[in-house]
Length: 158
Image (cartoon, rainbow, N blue to C red; front, top):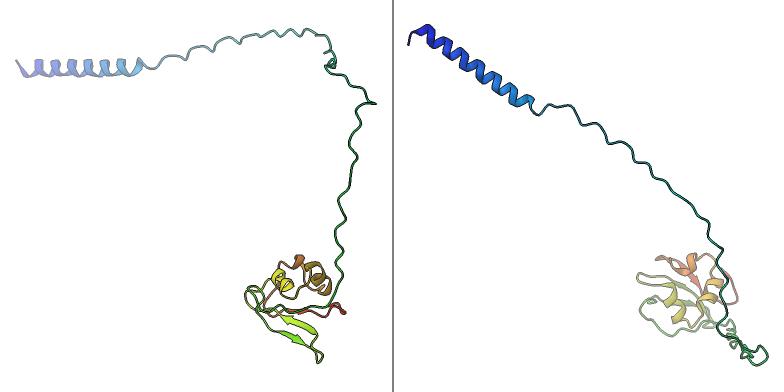
């Protein structure tokens, strides 16, 4: 085959390849399908009759059914404030209290690991009384800090 014929054959083959490739590439390029027409929904509201009140299934005579009398609980005991008594060191109240010359407890200094509740238990005082005696203690005694001085003299506040 002469050289010119060979080149012409190659050119036709290349054109055929390009045409085929282009045709394959363009087969995926079609116009998008038109959107579906919107659907119309018709809602019909029909009124219904009002519901009937429930009919009683059981009747009773009010005069025969007398409820049991309500009896209130006994009142809570009133705890009278009184002096602190030291029940000895315990977990949560391990510091040393300060006493006056007569042996009456005056104060207690908070040490590491102490809690207000345990201090009240150690000195046999209701927590509410100890809080009343120590207005500088906030948050119902939940936050006491090392070095806080707790008043134990029940005749004084603060």
